Length: 171
Picture 1 (tube, rainbow, N blue to C red):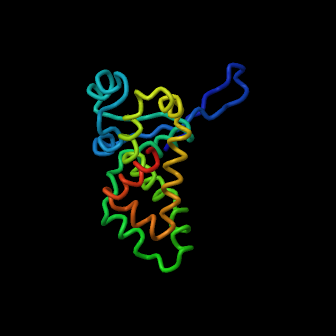
Picture 2: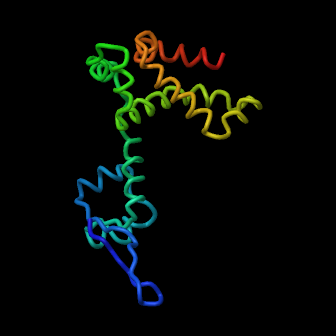
């Protein structure tokens, strides 16, 4: 990353307006698997064969977090591997403190819960309840935290049993 500074209108001070990063074709395809935003690809990339972004550090951090949403769903084998090192109940709590892993588990649970929430869109009361993402996120977080217990983990790792647990939340 290369820092980019510009002069303020007074010409006295300089401030950081972000960082500039050039990406290879492989990195571009990984970061933007469905294509780039706006007309960037048509007007710039196809003509220059170079792909670069300028962004603040916070913007790059958000981009990295959003990239995690493209992770593939976790399989039962993934969950078995993740939780195979648990010897005592407190170990699962420590495992779920791993930010990247927790985001992947949370994302997987959200994918499972989405169809049930979409079914309720026609229900006047439930559509208002889920108009904001807060309750949906809270329910998914609650399910993720329940994976600390062996019984709930057993039920949430398997997609069929997970669907039954989610249905019980809404029935």
